[in-house]
Length: 267
Image 1: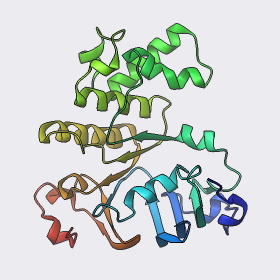
Image 2: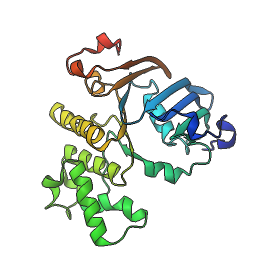
Image 3: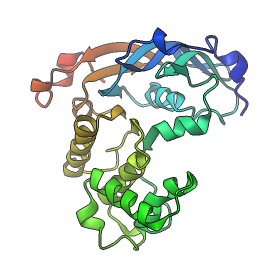
Image 4: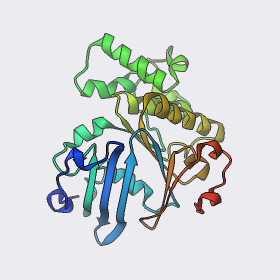
């Protein structure tokens, strides 16, 4: 695919002073096209630093497309065209920002964890090695720290040399989260991270995201079609037909008991 990056983004430069300090990602007049299909329509949205934001909506509404656009994962899709601006800490991600630098600043977690066909240790060490870290003592420290942050060190510390493919679904998802935080990326994008998990494991994974947000100050953007999962967020953005239809803060004291209809989030 050819994305015309020079023409696609109208506002190619942004000075950090243009963006309030509590805004991590600023989206202005974002439109995205796949050929003639208009997938995202005039999105204007500020993502707050240090908060959990949930994109919610039915299948095909554009929520995952929006998330992928924030990480330039549409770059290789044929006939994709992006208009508008997306800034990260005031810098336009479709302007002068190197895509590899962007990926270092954003950790990704998907619905299917898809561990590499290698050991647990090598799954975690893969990213640091690609960034030039090869000293074993340093890698050992990084692997342990990442697995501790993903709340799975005690389960896997004696299985580091075993294949990650042999882990349970919940364990694989925690390894995926460990990979997402291994480079201390300040942002985590999670696309339907509980979609393949049972209720108990879904709660554990969402409690983990909450801890990463509260204790490690990660900014998290979560895509889900499940209102119970969305209620873990500080803010819920409902997307319908590629447009924002609801933008509402979640009252934490009632987040676990409020029904989605009270937030006007009928799916």
